[in-house]
Figure 1 (cartoon, one colour):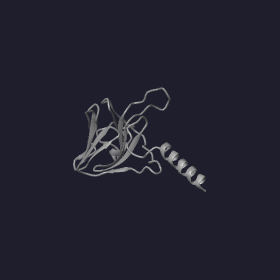
Figure 2 (figure 1 turned 90 degrees about the horizontal axis):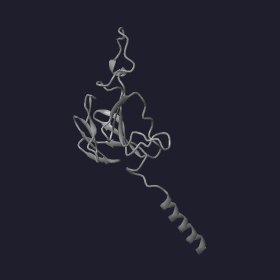
Figure 3 (figure 1 turned 120 degrees about the vertical axis):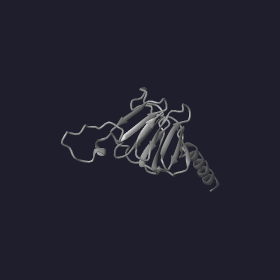
Figure 4 (figure 1 turned 45 degrees about the horizontal axis):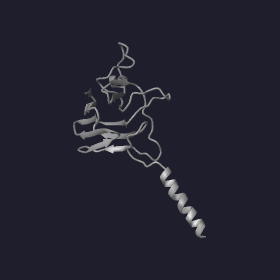
Length: 164
């Protein structure tokens, strides 16, 4: 009986040392999904993007924010001259900034959060340290600043984006 209890304790201890801890680990390939309340949107704050192909570099640490469309982004595709729908739906829906200050727009989908890793809800008036980025939410919008380089972006309450 004593050997079984000792073996079980050893296996449990070994299992705990091999299981990665949850959290905002700023290591390669890690990201945290956040929900922004003002303006309402979803973002992924990443410590690194090593690229989809092993050995091929990606864009590096980055933030991707998505909404129905950003008013100062390009339209994709451009509307026909006789189109009368909501112009916001034709604007690109993702704003992307890297730690190096590179900024891009694109039309894509962030996808769903992984099971057991719910989105972090960003609360107005709070400052967050996520994946090597400082995230500050105010009533006027949200700011993402890379801690190492100082580059980032501001998204105001009307979804206008400015990178820095």
